[in-house]
Amino acid sequence: MTINNNDAGIIVKSPGRINLIGEHIDYNGGHVLPAAIDRKVILEFHKNDNGQCHVRSVDEGDFAFDIQNPLQISDTHWENYVLGVVDGIQKARPNQLGGFDCVISSELPIGAGISSSAALECGVAKGLNELFDLGLSNLELIEISRMAEHNFVGTKCGVMDQFAVTMGKRKKLLLLNCETLDYKLIDAEFAPYKILLLNTNVSHNLATSEYNTRREECEQALAVIQKDHPQYPFLADVPESVIETYKEKLFGKIYQRALFVSRENARTLKAAELIQSGDIKGFGELMYQTHEGLSKNYEVSCPELDFLVDLSKDIPQVVGSRMMGGGFGGCTINLVKETFINEFMELASKTYKEQFDINLTSILVATSNGVETTKSV
Ligand code: GLA
Image (tube, rainbow, N blue to C red):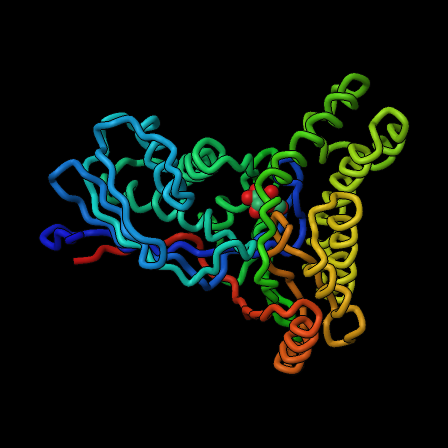
């Protein structure tokens, strides 16, 4: 593939995301606390005049499609992140896209729960918006990216990842209300602790199907509760004391899911207060509670994640640890005393290797701005 360098193009840097707390509650109308991070997907776009769209991923290979033809879901998984966004833009701004060339490289590991997928979707959305001067707002780009995941990729995700990737700010966390999309920026200040991700390097293939099942289970719980309490539009709005009155009416695991969602929403609001008041240890306790809930009530953890969280409990220099993102593999997020980071990484890698015979990788992250663009020549 050749890039037509006569035209000014667009370079996009689109970050991954972390989530401090508030897991699996975005699609339940709850509060989440994510941030964009300093690891990115980098995309370069140029227009061409042949009506063809050529997309090359340095790691995954290339593909092409004709912008005039209706788009189909591809058998090659990663292509759907791009195709889904192009399809969404075509629907939002009919006949305004032309042919383009796009080259993609990434610093984000895939399947690690740090949203390489949202980084790609939002990067494509932002890049095409600028290249073709479409005037789509950030909220429209977020929605197009989220729906690409629903319609082309097949994960019925919430809004957290695309929102954080697009709206993130350096040194800030976003306390996002997923029901209203109102958000507040909170200082990402954890001194003397740093945020360290430990990547299990496993990605169990249950991730997509079980994710969609959890969403359905939550919808079932809400439908039962709403018969008596129509005042609650989302499951995360239902107080724990009300959920508890449904112990008999909701089937065992559906009840457990609902309980987790209500508790996790309350925990997230509490966590935001603790972080703002500098009580990092108190916040760390909530991270452990979240992990317990995700593992036991929501059942989206796996032995590798549980092992790493358990290991950290015996180490006083780690004040909080939990699985992060959709689950069934990926990373744990840990708050580790800065002076102990190297020692902790060594210890965790050694014991993890002994237990599972898998190499652990670690990522020390800093928060960053959301997706940014510059002109290229
Ligand atoms: C994935 C989804 C998000 C969110 C998290 C779990 O990352 O894309 O919408 O539901 O899982 O919190």
